[in-house]
Amino acid sequence: MMFALILASVSVETPNQTSAPAPDVQAKTMPTRDKPKSAPLSVGQLAEKARTALNAGDFRDAVNDYKLLLKQEPRPDWRDGLTAAYAGRARELAAKGMLKEALVMWENRAALAPDLPMEADQLTLLARLGRFDALPAQLTDPKTPEALAERLHAVCWTGQPSTGPTTGGWIRS
Image (cartoon, rainbow, N blue to C red):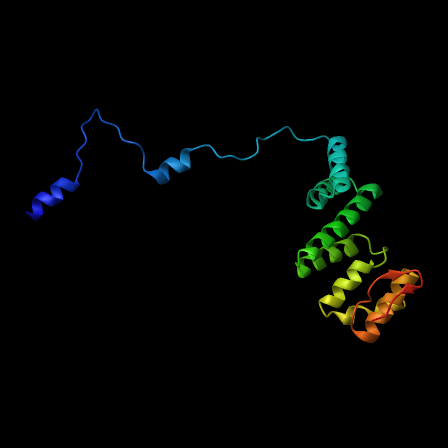
């Protein structure tokens, strides 16, 4: 009886019969749904794509495109575009609660353009992360705008970011 059950579970194929490949083999041979490969963009087209992405708020693509452009030629307008894209991407990530990733974007911006002052959003992020050790140097930095210095002073004294701009300057917590 046991022998009959084993024979019943085995299928026998004749030489003219074909069977479909196993599902895992079939999945490997099916075409993927990746984006179709297009011709590489010219430098001018890539620059336009980067500007369009930046203006549309697509900071991730803008970062990637400006990086490609800067690898080809270190033009100041492309560097400015990349610093703006880094700042925009940092704000996006911070809004999503991805604070450490946002900090990396701010650090990339600072490494690319050390002559730029710290922005208020970067200061707020540092405070949210408890990175107060990085803040006092900004008080004496001549590149730090006056309103930002006032906000920074409030953060250093209270440990909390100020609430934002008003007609009389920054409100201290």
